[in-house]
Length: 575
Image (cartoon, rainbow, N blue to C red; front, side):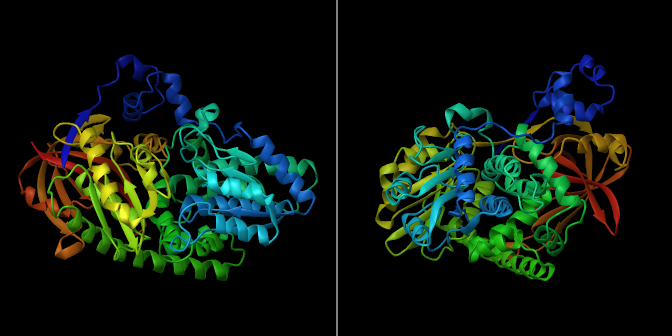
């Protein structure tokens, strides 16, 4: 993998002088990210509380749903089986139920129905009495399904955030999607964020009409919004940042029963859950249900009202997640061997097999991208049908690539970095050939580079200012949270470090070590502990006494109740 290191230029002295109440390291990080106006820095560090946004067709959707509630029409919620979709389904069902709606929830089975709306499910929901269907986190490309709903006399309300086909929307009763050109200012909302906009309006107008039957408030839904938004890896800037900050506060102070049980099952610090915990512990457990079985178990956890049931479901998801990890390891290794069998340096990694568990092919594709930094496609073949999942790198918009060959697919869609599709298995060779050609044409000379951008370069000995984890320096760094896509954890270039000790940690696949543990000596001869997650395979590159430079995150870890500084190595080079 080619890796390029870039280091941001230092901010001018006047910039720091204009921010006397902000620690210089925090100010430098924001300057490096384009916040060059001191007022923009203050606005970022103190974002506004979540507020409603205006989206096309939102008024139409609210009016139709309120009419359905008053007339006792049955409303069906049609979700997705990932964490974003399940969170949105839970949010919407709680909102409608609080307003007295006759509501039921349908979440498709990944293996039996696949992603998104399908005609058979719409027909079944209609036969069960639903006159209104609200999709959450799906439907942007449901042209056939929207026409079938119209033919049945069902009013389909689509709430989604996925890309449209050439800017065109299905002919639904209402289409609430910030990907519409007129709503582009909010295009980064997750599916649950879009659903939340609808929920806020419904609760406000429903209460004014005297429909609200219990104490459901928009604030009580924010923990769901935070979990779904972080899980879907949308940028944590702007409105998303406000939503996630408020949602994490709710999660840490007054969480719903299901999320509290899941925090406990994941062995996370109750009351101190951050976005990283959501992304790497809570979301994978919620996703595990839909990957290995039915996402209805995750949905049931999120809406659970009994502590015993919540605990039971949380333990079930925890066990499923452990099994998911084992299966993912197996599939990713097998896919890698197949993808590299003919070419050790292909423009795109492509692997297809009936042996690949369809619930983890997306995770396997992501593992391949992380390891080789080229686009990856992993496909499950089931007789004459094939279902694939794609992950990509900066510079290769995978959904646009699929759009170039849309005639091959029965269904496809996604984002710049991730997509999925279904097609007849007989078309896989043609798909592979065309994707190879597009990726080869887009690949820069020398290959795609993994670019690490440090916001500041500091001497290892300067970390002494961060040792006091409750002090000003660390407090101001934490004001940059929540971290995630679009607002990553600060990356620092640490220099003047000498390796004091090298150790491998954990057991990786095929007898390797997963992680790297270092003891580093600074120029004042102070010893610092550092860990390199998933860098165990690079331990042989280091030796005691070697001078190194490191790209690293700085965080806080808790051990035996004691909070302390942790250096997390992302990459290193011998000086």
